[in-house]
Length: 122
Image (cartoon, rainbow, N blue to C red; front, side):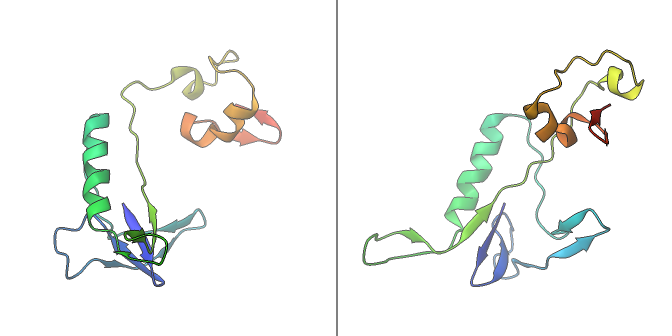
């Protein structure tokens, strides 16, 4: 969990609060990453919510004319989900995949393990 405050990226889960600034790095041609961001393993929704609360405590806040505790930043929470079961229909390129060909499936294709070729989902 990070925040962007005054054009600085800050690590909201860092144990050392004096050194919590992060640099955005290019990750191949696939996008951007924050390689020094704190990663915490979680196994339940309760664990995730506890980390979100911890990150909220470390966010930059200040008072404004309309609100006495206003966030002065944008926060970003990233979760890396590892599934226990491999979707074998996708890895074996079976003709029948247990997902519908829908707009939702199209938007979630990276998360579901699809590889898009043209307009066909495989």
